[in-house]
Length: 47
Figure 1 (cartoon, one colour):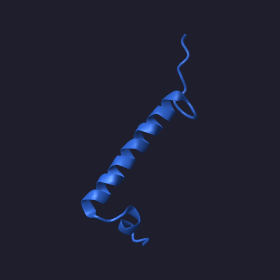
Figure 2 (cartoon, helix red, strand yellow):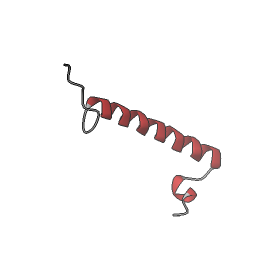
Figure 3 (cartoon, one colour):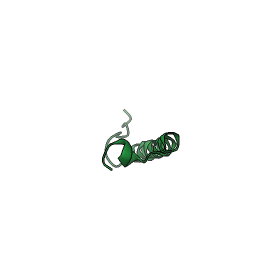
Figure 4 (cartoon, helix red, strand yellow):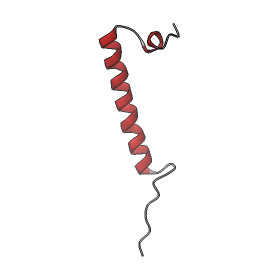
């Protein structure tokens, strides 16, 4: 029987997806700022 690689914790699989989602979030944040002309804090009403 083969052992399956763990998909939780600090594994290569988890860190790869964490990096991909962080890059996606960063690009979406920059695009939103460009389209609205407001920073993220202004959009949230914190400034």
